[in-house]
Length: 359
Image (cartoon, rainbow, N blue to C red; front, top):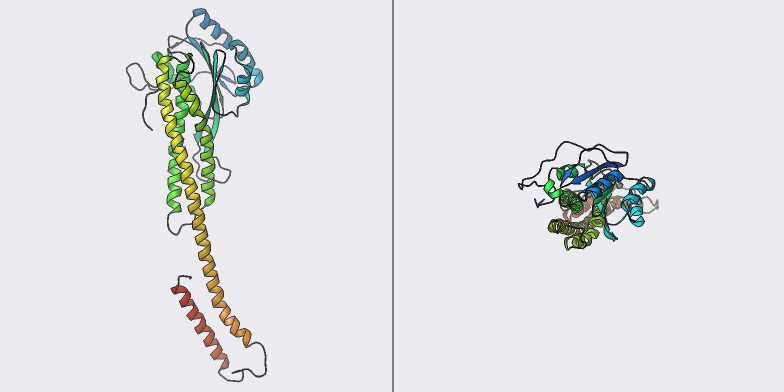
């Protein structure tokens, strides 16, 4: 994965910021963290959402960052009223299952991103999940950013720590957090696509390896997961382009250039996913052709053995008709002669079929 610049990953000297081993203490079961940032630094103390935004507006500077995990409608209503969140966006954040999108409600931006995680399992079945998906919603205002996460992965604790270690970037405001979230999600896309690339390379080598049995189910499973990844990646292209082009003044000018880097990453992922789909379609066709060829080979072997077995059966059937006047029925050497004829006929047919590669 190319090491492109991203907000929250570098300090003032341009060096990569090292993540620290601290994790914010959960405020409640669904509020993962609630913090106030002024000039890029986190204020000490534990805050609830009402006190946090009141402190920011009293100072006239800084912003609030609230992280939520799968809140219910009752749990998020208080936050929605305090920050003036639109009811339609709140409903989407609660119920999830949304396509990636970017919407503007008055002075608030609402962005939906699909999170992905590669599930590395030894054995896979038709019901296995290679790409585990979740959702991440971001409410962005002039002095606040609220992240709502659905799913068991894509935690933002490390991102928060990295941004807190880079006050210069965090001082750019809530849009710096939005970029950090988008950058983290798209970087995960790159990691997943590279893992899928390795799986597809293995399948491709197996398909075109001579004398190997192909499990077409694995190819269909991989194709299904690539389609799931495509549904997460492709709809995000337009929202990312709008953020990079200055869709709203809530995105700081200094942050837009970083969104262009995220857009480039996303374009690369989209191209890889498209190539995966085409390659898997080709592998499906090749697998079906190989299976058809194998079935034809099996049918030829079956037909050859049937022909060999039918020859002595035919001779035995003729001499089993019990007519009174049949050649050699009274001859002492009739039986040995018939057995020799059967054996010679079977051997001749076997050699003919073997020469023609039917056996």
